[in-house]
Length: 286
Length: 343
Ligand SMILES: Cc1cc2nc3c(=O)[nH]c(=O)nc-3n(C[C@H](O)[C@H](O)[C@H](O)COP(=O)(O)OP(=O)(O)OC[C@H]3O[C@@H](n4cnc5c(N)ncnc54)[C@H](O)[C@@H]3O)c2cc1C
Ligand code: SF4
Ligand code: SF4
Image (cartoon, helix red, strand yellow):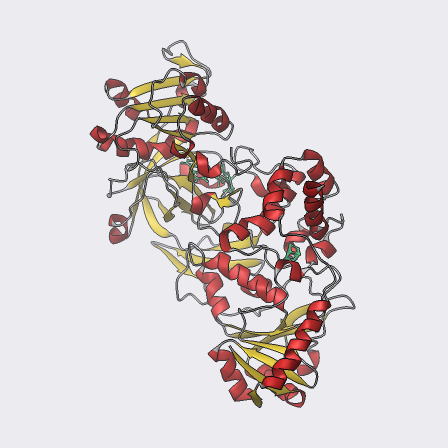
């Protein structure tokens, strides 16, 4: 470095400064996932914390690191928001070891691309999620259910590796009881108690009845997209009505660090939700 | 823009007063081949007749390799503060393509969200430009970067016995008023300047055929042999990123002091050419091969920002060509794409 070491200047602002937040409650969802209820300590900021389905926050574990997480709770809930986190590494592992009352940092919400729930009104909506991919679409599902009459059919297809990995069980139990949700559950490795489908999510799509102006949403591990999208296309759903959440490595969340590029776009500021039409010609998007 | 003229015999005093009045950063000869931008305290150290600097000056000042962004103290409460460095500095004798590189970084760091940590430094940086001799690997004119229309306070063109100065800001005008004896440029000065620029532009020898790259790239993208051949010798070392005036990829990390009371968020330069650039938890890698990473680097440099800001993210400085031990050459590769498609 060419500069001498000087006193730190700490006036002004920075987009990298997280808000302090408190973990209110932790719920174990599976062996590897936990659901955290989180509230910003600054009450005014919490009240103003509004997000759209599909958006994410950057979570800081002080002294340890930062990572992006989708918000699975309902945008209508202004008291707190939730994060569903899989224990896979540094930051995610650290929050798994925390307890209610512990402090974390939050930046966001981020992402310009979200699930266009307004446009979906009056139409059939098909949502396909794999594994942890249920987290980003959860807030869309909740948004739709809070205004269920404005939408036509709601189809949810959810696949997990095995029954013990199914997330958001309570919600799923509720969905099963409703007659205004067509639910398809599937696992790769069933146990003896499993009564639902076996195999990949893609198998369940051909059976869906939907109109050509339906909206479709997919979120899951990277390998899943291509297969699901081709099933949607067989149903003649228009590419501009198919939405995907594309998660890439992200370091900043605000369009600077450049890690999350998908072709000419950045997942953090142009996405993470894209329409299939937008990314059609972006090589390696799916 | 104002246009002024400074007689050569007034140059030394002007620069000396800048050196004594400011934190002054300018080119210093490092060895036969390269210069480095450093804080200068004595006029004698300054050497503006440079051809190469390995690390681009603006990049290391505005976007240092390792930069603290935020600091925090953890006690009963957590106190988080931004670390925004904003001392006034003069950056002297930076050339047009490096100014254009800095202008590119400005766009990146102020689009969508304003990166305060970058902007505070940029706002306080007084930039005085000067033309330098292009290296053989320089193709700035092909990407429109051999001339800067903005992003500086003063730009001084050496037109013989005097400097023709383009004054782009009130701050630059103020420096001239306070520290130099200048007069308004007249018709004849413009004539000399015009002739000088024609001559200067003629000194760039390397030409690349980039006009149709934007579309041609997509046709070539899936041609496996083309990319395997282009990237076959790449060591994935990242030197090309390190020396580039427009590369801006970084990682953010959080660290704690040993007492576990104080911590900080810092950013560090990253490189899109190294294997873990696209690696995420769980082991999936979005950019697993060197061919794939080279393609993405070219897309980023030559296409992405053409679409976003109508400019290339490459200023044609040629540094990456000289830095690459595997002889991977962006200029040749652009020409090869053209040849391949039009053949
Ligand atoms: C838009 C978006 C939404 C996400 N939503 C969720 C969610 O709801 N639940 C959840 O459990 N995880 C989610 N992830 C993944 C999550 O951000 C972390 O990457 C993952 O938890 C591992 O981070 P780590 O720091 O624990 O692991 P480490 O191995 O320590 O990762 C180091 C760094 O690499 C990057 N990184 C590693 N893996 C990934 C990845 N898979 N995706 C992106 N960047 C990565 C991160 O910047 C991270 O800081 C999301 C990622 C993105 C981009
Ligand atoms: S292109 Fe050259 S400089 Fe860049 S990573 Fe490969 S070997 Fe290193
Ligand atoms: S890509 Fe190479 S030629 Fe272009 S600006 Fe960067 S270092 Fe210079």
